[in-house]
Image (cartoon, rainbow, N blue to C red; front, side, top):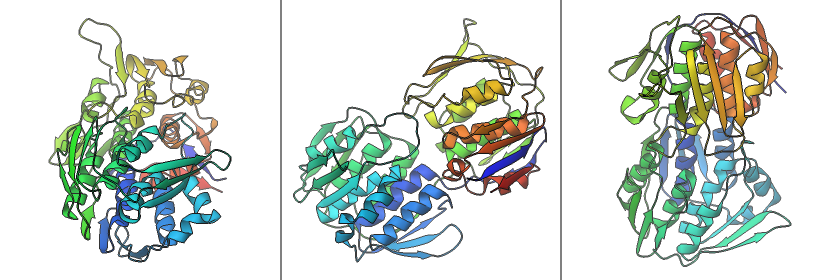
Length: 435
């Protein structure tokens, strides 16, 4: 198990370019199964979860060619459906939550799918009901082998249907959408997710020959087509990395420019960090964050304590709540962080408390952070990364702390952030990877 040894208290300076979006990559990669023609994808991040999905696609028979550091071509003209019956497939698919999105394309093009219970972060339960209810509405029949934890799905005669999703699940919407693009007739998906990554998927599918309207809204209409063709696609910059870099700059009193951020696709992320007192300037598509010794959290208009909560898009993404929480520890003022969408994502605050942060964990979903305006700096400790986002939050805390910290289980961080130690060291950080 690898670790990071982090020397804290260093100020960073320079430019950093966010990687391609992990959450978009997982959807887009699954979509290559929808056509026998070549699909070329650019800005693919070199991270564990994405690499494991590319490996899985290769095992399924997709011809994968690396064209450059961030560019690949994929051609799914010889898919081995019998591989879906192997133990190797079930093991590899179950280790990666994003693998669930291969089901939609497999049902659309081949009429069959098989998947074991997906893995992923240990951040509480994440139901699969939305995916399967949507497939059922399209006419698929599925069976769950409780003993083996394997899903068997028969989708030989998919037909368009109206559906109102029980939750605006991003992966659920993507999965249903990919199944519907080649179903017979018209499909209407209401309460659909409308994140920029989902919009990117819709735009890609339309370039491939799909007929999707309502893109960017929560009401999607899909006219089924018989087949799709190849295309080129470029991923958006990762908004979670961008938010992480904003919080990191504030915590470490650093002057940083985030390059090519595609600001118009970030929603309320910049505004949320501004409400925490963090200054930033938009310079074209770059975000310039000046070094700040102090930043003060706003209150609501009536003077009450600010609450920052996650919500479905265009609300604030749950993936950045841990960054908000750690950033608030060195601010002036108090904020209530409310994690509504997942159960266990606040269970890393004990490490921050051990570092000297003033945090009250109210319950599994809420934490009150009392920022003392850097009067009591965090101190370096040894800690373990529980999941991707908490891991980067702890890394940011360690970079701002006095002394040296050791973060174990950094494989979790590697699942979501490419070369993070090398990229931050280039700005002046002191992060050493220890095996």
